[in-house]
Picture (spheres, rainbow, N blue to C red):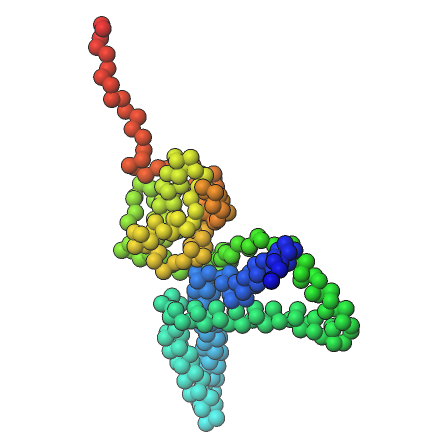
Amino acid sequence: MRTKPGPLIVRTTRGAGNIAVLLAHWAGGHTIGEEELLRRIIKSRADAHAEAVDEHQREARRAHKRATKLRRIAAEDGGLVPAAQSDLAQAEHEGRRHDAALEALGDFEIRDIDPGQVGHLRKKIAAVRCAVLTLPVAGVVAGTWLLDGVVLIVSALGTAAACFARGHHPFELSVRPVPAELLAATARLELGVGEEEAEEEPEAIETGDLGAWRHTLRLFVEHAVAEAHLARKGGVLAVDLLQRLQASGLFLYKTPDMFPAVLRSADIPVKKISVNGEKALGVQYTELTSALGRLPRLPTHLVPDLTRTEPLPREGA
């Protein structure tokens, strides 16, 4: 007859599972959203382009300066010796070559990225993080081998204590927001719905640098949060917002883990909220009010009709 494990063992085992899930989420690079990976790829391309332009400009100036100096010497001396003539021809050739390279490079343009490149970058990040995870294990093994077996015992006890402390409370597996410096460096990159999908209400779109899809998303979230407030709810969960948008054919390529980063990129405040007893990332009414600088507006069909429907009393009645 099997004996049922005690609550201490059950709690420790459950905590170990929760910690393992968190480590797997982090080691797999899933804390980094697709948008951040896309922007990293774009930034690396832009940096490489800028470096190539700087190099060709530097070499072109050097070649033209050398050619100008040799022409001046030829004008003063009435000609050049064969070796100097060869140097002049070489300098002119180098100058033309670098000028052609600069013309071919032109201005940096953001082009479509193969989804495989995003997956490849995520795998590279995962490989580095997995290597980092092996360092503590290697340190314990080395300490046990070189110092004393007490190192292994202390490490095991510490791990068990951490698992027991976590217990039955799982970690929130989320995607970190895109760093502000990366957003600034790739401000020209537009992610989200296309122009044909962005149907905007002119009176609700404020002037600014945000793209059309961001304005559309902000307007949708504003209406949804205002409607939730009318129903005496504190906000709307991000997963519910994504489901509504996908039901309309928008953001079909986004997952619930990726969508909070999309909201943040549109300057929509996202935090952990509770709606109908469910706690998850979402948009809170008070936070959105602070971000907008005004109360969120209701959609037109939900605006209460405050006009009087009863006939006015006649004069003298």
